[in-house]
Image (cartoon, rainbow, N blue to C red; front, side, top):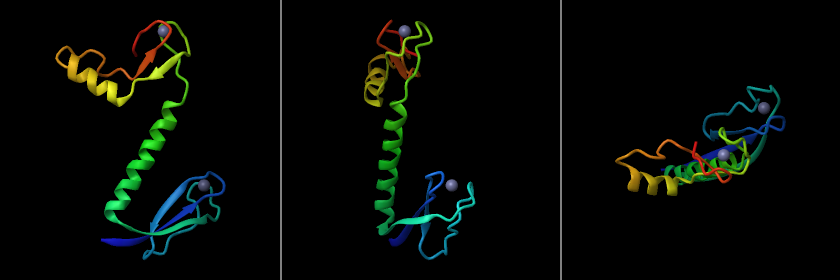
Length: 114
Ligand SMILES: [Zn+2]
Ligand SMILES: [Zn+2]
């Protein structure tokens, strides 16, 4: 299934809004009440759209992981996000004991996970 998608961006809050081309989109940002600008117009399949969505999600996640988190134990900012890969490995190896499963961050200073 192929359909046309339009993407509008709010110049004030930089939020992206996606619309199906057939439904006349409201081009006023619901948050800022200003007119948005059309930044993208494309024909996509539902499949492609799903891929794009996943890519955006990944970008968003890598952006989030770039934020600095303090270690709750030693207060160091020398922390790194435990990647889903190492989490998956951890679950595979330590799954039975449940170690590290819900931990998302690793402190490079004192070595604790939180
Ligand atoms: Zn806005
Ligand atoms: Zn620490």
